[in-house]
Length: 264
Image (tube, rainbow, N blue to C red; front, side, top):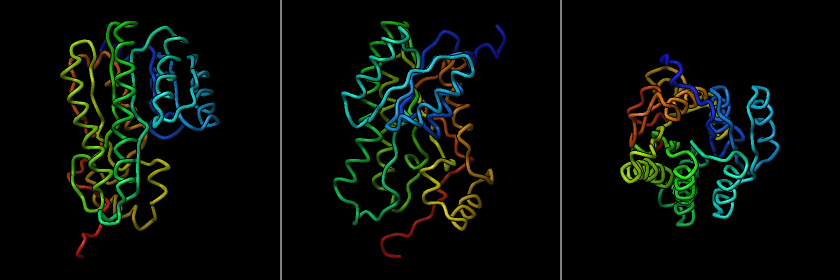
């Protein structure tokens, strides 16, 4: 086997949440290009149909599932659909997540704080809890990849809700990795500022210029930067890696979106 063969996913089935666009869609296409069939879930069917079309053009199969990860019954349907359609699950990418934009802590409601946690952490917990038994039952092993954030590692003013949620997701990754080794590997990607629709919604030319200035690699990330790492974590190439949070963030040691403190 050549070293490149270790990055192949032939015969494997990947389940990806939030796969209609951005990082989730990029992961789905990367996995399909490497030989996997994919189950893609998101709230917007039209976006999923577009991604599925690209996957099928590569000669791979795609199953579309309408999914709101805030609903446990939707998560159950996602995992069941994967097994019913393809007979196995090898890979789970807990990509769906996000939250409120930067906001002063004293103006952040309990509902917003808990909503960030539910969206980013509980959803990944539920999907993992559902998928792990099916992975072991159908494939004998598996890989779970959580999409975390540099905001969960480096503290910054006004990121109390989102930052704490992503930090918890990173630690959940480590907890699950310890419990389910050696059959299930669990890793995360600590994503930096990446060009997605979520980032573009708060990105002005001035903000982008400043973020690039504060990033050692002197650019924002592309979704393909993240999907390349996800492919490594999903594939046999990373067979000896579990419980880690891989930083794909352009070299950041602090957030590159500077926000004022409470008394500034």
